[in-house]
Amino acid sequence: MAAVTCEIQWLTYLLQDFKVFFEQPSLLYCDNDSARYIAANPVFHERTKHIEIDCHIVREKLKKGLIHLLPISTTEQLADIYTKALSPQSFKSICSKLGLINICSPACGGYQRIWIQASRRKLIAILLFCLF
Image (cartoon, rainbow, N blue to C red):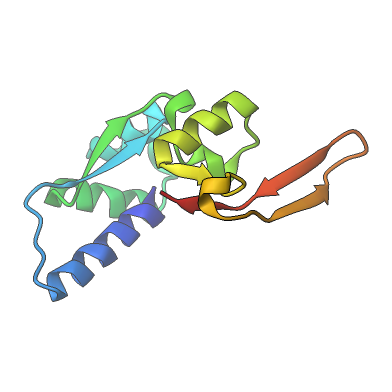
């Protein structure tokens, strides 16, 4: 969460250089309730004293209004497409939510398919997508 917060800060500075200003905080969706509570709670307890500077960065930006943390169900987390092995149904659902299309479709003008041996039992097809 701290890395994304830093990226949001950088993008905010970049957009300000281009004279684009936002009055609303950036929405940051988090599927970890504990992380959201720790980031929002300025009081430290014995159980949370091991938390490093990353948490302080998120707290500071949350307090300044740069970001706003919102809960999201783990099943609806769009970033999972980049970090987890998903079922075909979940993969297709997230692709449609992101606006990705299959370039194997004749309407997109061709395709490229790369096969990788993942295990003895299955092959994973990595299809290259283009933004719609």
